[in-house]
Image (tube, rainbow, N blue to C red; front, side):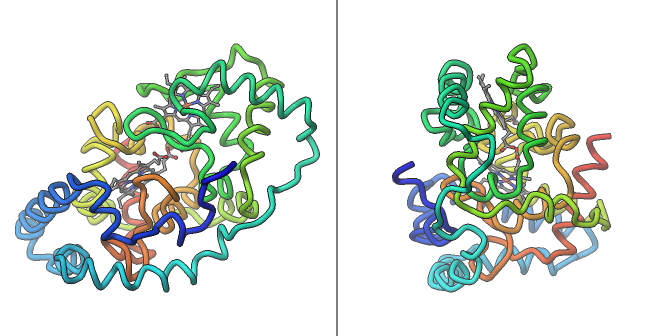
Length: 281
Ligand code: HEC
Ligand code: HEC
């Protein structure tokens, strides 16, 4: 698939500066998040650490600094998704791939767009290497079969298992990054403090994913990560990796490393995961 970047460095081309040029409105989001963040911090017994951490990535000076650091950060992480040949799979016969593509065009393309590149606020990208490398076949097939309740993602159980699997093969035919699904899904469950997680969520994530985690329904550009349709299918490892590394060519940036808008620690990411699961109960 031409023009699809396959590394973190490519996904971040232009760094944060590029990000804010591309999405000028994001400044408003960042500014609002900043104001809200300071308020929340004041209200929460002066947990100044959080304000400082978000602040690190906020001002124009630190954005420029972060942008120049992006290349280095990208180089060190690009081993996850470096440019490689498409992963060969035993069931990916030409006939299955053709069927999968036809089914995708007929059933999915209207929302997920040609080549499944996604569209902000409409449907996510299904072919970014970060997703392909950590999503198991079970995650893909289960999500396609069951859809995601209370979102635009409808269930496609009526297609039947073999057609759903043909679509999965078609999506996989875009995959060049190594399969890390087993390793990621076997990571330990998150342990942490949901109250801290809530503060991070509200300060950083809610702008795009909605205050209640209901995603596009709340007018955001991110998916409904606070709803069961996602949470019941995604492991803690899946969420952790996505928050760390983001997704190339989408508005989901990684939240770890010097170039990130907020450089969250492993523990802070786990706090957010614990919060997401708790609020969905
Ligand atoms: C600038 C907007 C933005 C911010 C801020 C943001 N996200 Fe995202 N996030 C997205 C988008 C957009 C996607 C889906 C990518 C796509 O459109 O293809 C996404 C996807 C995800 C996913 C995968 C969900 C799925 O459906 O598979 C997780 C998990 C996630 N984000 C967690 C977070 C967390 C936690 C935070 C806060 C630390 C956060 N995001 C902040 C925009 C954002
Ligand atoms: C009416 C629009 C629509 C159609 C048609 C549609 N989807 Fe989706 N899809 C969505 C939305 C919206 C989401 C994100 C839901 C959320 O907010 O969690 C999504 C999410 C997904 C996800 C999860 C991706 C992730 O990042 O975790 C997969 C996989 C998926 N769709 C596959 C498909 C396939 C395959 C088809 C066709 C059989 C299809 N979808 C048809 C709207 C659609």
